[in-house]
Image 1: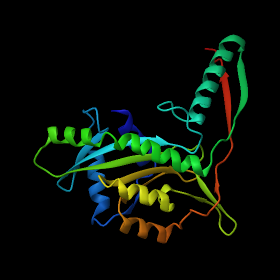
Image 2 (image 1 turned 30 degrees about the vertical axis):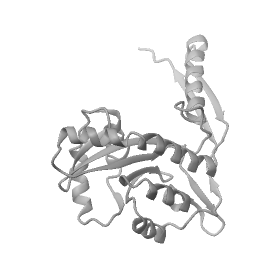
Image 3 (image 1 turned 90 degrees about the vertical axis):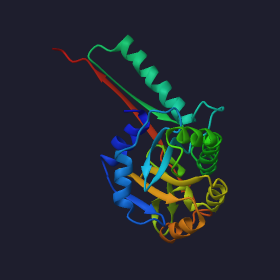
Length: 247
């Protein structure tokens, strides 16, 4: 099992098998279940592929978050700091631990709306640049049937991304609530659908949406446009705990 398939199954579907859909296609629940359960991963790119309603779908995965982005290809500020904390704690445990060790760390919160939107677009562009390779590799698998590219995108902002509304309090925010992102995605129309993974405050959820104006118009009937809303991200504290188990 490759990493992307494990994430889709273990982090999402095995915990909550409901996928919210904004698509013009019928019988999505049954067809999606068949598609996901029969995904394959024996080519380099896209990450996953499978048959969906007589079409061959390539599913490319990427993650983004709302923290400050580091230099190209080096990920986010949060990921770097989290990795540094893990290494520091492991080194400390080797040197100081007798029976147990506890240490609390705070990660500086650099999350904001500009990072949320900018990181989404930047990483999307990086993967979209390979779209010819995705189609070519799918054609090598089956040259006769129609092919589509979908993106599986995860918001990995720690503890989720929110709108902070005076009237409604904290509500989950998704990129499709921003006109800027809708316009950006529609211009990248070789991606036909987006499978979006996010944390809703207590569990991981999935949403599937067509990459077209009709789907985004239906989406914002349920989730209001967030262009002028204040966004919010929680501060993150990381606790390190280790103990020696005597046998």
